[in-house]
Length: 370
Image (cartoon, rainbow, N blue to C red; front, side, top):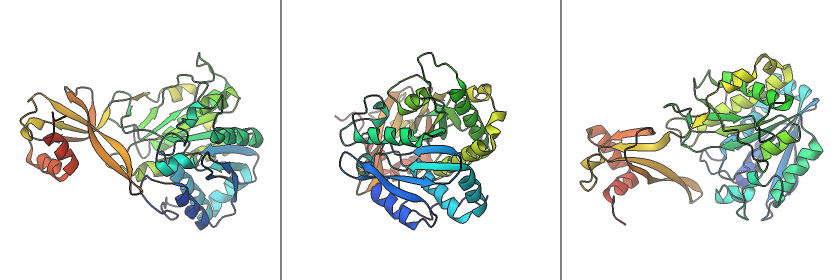
């Protein structure tokens, strides 16, 4: 395979990626992808379906079921871009697979950069009642396409760690349960084997940086519902890579996982992996915050000497770009938490960095003010 070359079809590197940006990217594609509108969102925005390949194995992929989770959408665009310049990969996939891709399932949520759709419904909790038109469309595609595999593509917050360690879960996977007992059948075993293979591929780039998502059963979640229907379904979670809030590195890793997964489906190499390999992936912890400020008393004498500050960013859409606004998540003893950035206000260099981060500096200055 040729070197990874992202961004060729991009409009922006920002996390904000609404339908308009997708349409421009699709117009730049130069491969024979069948693109059609499968229906319209609650606010009458088009929802696109892309079909590619002529092979016997059918793979359904969908992204931005949550509108503020765009990293995997960009990775799908990178996959399509690869197929337009790497003839070898294209021919392998075309002859062995038929792909059906829904790049943005929730264009209304994508427009507002929200997890929920226009009616304030989480589409990933709507798989049974299917009260929303987006949920109905996804199920309609699932039933008509009859996939052999499903890739359910999401993004996760910066809080997740690999187990209870100081390693961020840059990518996480899940083979969803199909019953309350979290039983094992051939479909779930297949998903686990495929995840184990993709994890090994990602370890080449992020040693230990892959987590396993909690597999508590919820029939209202789409992955669980499709697994209940007998189709191996894999949940992808695009997480945080250090100092990469636009998630450009994570995007590359999701792309690599997608490609490795498709190749494994084609050559059946996932059969060399076991359920034990899957269970060896540490389950996600929630050990991270964005910034830990120690010795904050050095910046504001109203802060007691023994109080450290754990800061989380709130993502807000401002002028069609994502703004990361610092908020104090915890005050005092922050034992058990790790910061993606750790700043010691007693150190000159760290104190200078805090002063440059105006909103963080102001947050510390206003400590205790209602």
